[in-house]
Image 1 (cartoon, rainbow, N blue to C red):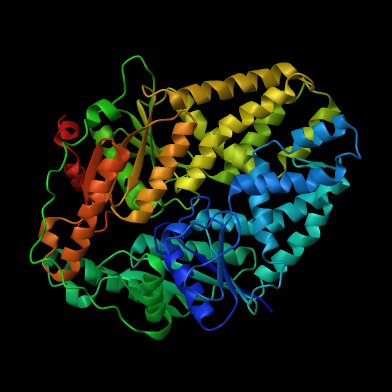
Image 2 (cartoon, rainbow, N blue to C red):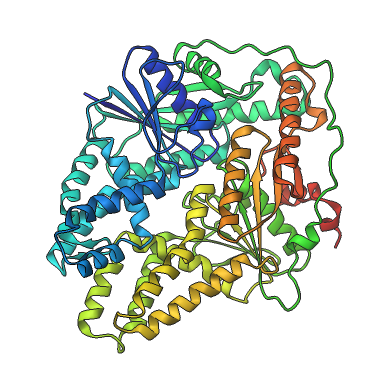
Length: 607
């Protein structure tokens, strides 16, 4: 009987590494093991150092281990063909065209990826399946989908018989599959949820919140891995002594609050990539065999010739007459997007610009960083700075009411009933969140709007939405009822696309730290953005070790690794790079945020 292991947690905590090490451990015990990633910004191939992609492939050098990365686009093509294929040559061409139109919406992508994920819970080919999931907020959304879609199909069957994915008859079989998947997810004998976290207060906060949300859908977690613990013997330098003590306090708090088994993993002095390194992690995780520190260079290596810092005034300050400046910070989970966004937003506000910081991350923790509550409506934080968190459920309720309100009096009762039914589908939640997000860009209430976005893959998905909806609206306007309203909607999406592509209005920055995985994820994101006509303007290299911090072999090894990757960043991206240092304290609260602004280049700090 197949066992399922889910690895979840905040972005950048080491989920993929722990999932891959676990898969190796189970395979080495002789169990047929499959590891599947559901993260649209997967780095499973980077970690195993081999091509994987949207198909099951054996992992080189390890018997009994296979892997697959679910590609949302490929999954969508397969899903559409599975639904439409049986009707080709049987149904009239106009009916096939209608089915294809129904399946051209952006919600089909979400549904298709989810459907492919559920497929793995139906087979019996493997003894163990390890799921390496997207960061927490999106994983919870994924796990809620079986419940939401099963309910929506049932309600639609009693109503018009239509869903946003087409007629109920074409997806009715899916309901039973989703019900079986839900039962498996809730069965602790078959399914184990492993939360991975860093020994940081924000990471513990998100772990506790995610566990609570999982319990609301009947799923319990079984194990927590605390990853990246500083070795005591490496923390002789004053800079790290305080960090070590702070980590130990969080570990103690976690032990008291979690109430489930905890495994502790030390920070390594180098990067974890390849079978040998992953097997070493598995040996520590499951057998308690601790890693050794490699001999380091004799002294702290300086960066040979660091380039000049970027001109942040030119990049970030609003252009007179061009309206609100939109600044996007995106990147892999855990690279410090939220902190960098908050530091920049606070400094722009302190310079006199009316600034709003918006988070689109379902696992947002803006309030934790500022040290003050942040709600679903813009509220003042300090001086010219306000903040808001997009609440998906509230955005959904407002969007639904606005769409129906605008259509009352212009659409027939039958059309309104059909619209209301479609608006109740799980797809609408995504669209509503996007609509709320984009209204802050369209508005003129602020000089600058800083967006702290969800991890890369989901941000790219969010930015794809205006393109998807513009194409869908174009197909609808010629034939459907109320074409004028739809034409107006289409025009709005085209204006949004133009705004995102205009460097005078929108600035895109990728945040990373100098290691292979975040660099490669950011590189792929930059190429994806470029294909959409959006150009990245600068890079933020975060968490750089200062020279004063590398007083022993452990940190000299880590700094040497960072310098190698800083050069790679300069060569690969050929963009201005803002170097931002690792701070001695975890940045929380207005005072520490203001202190952190001193690390920005002097051009921006001069009032």
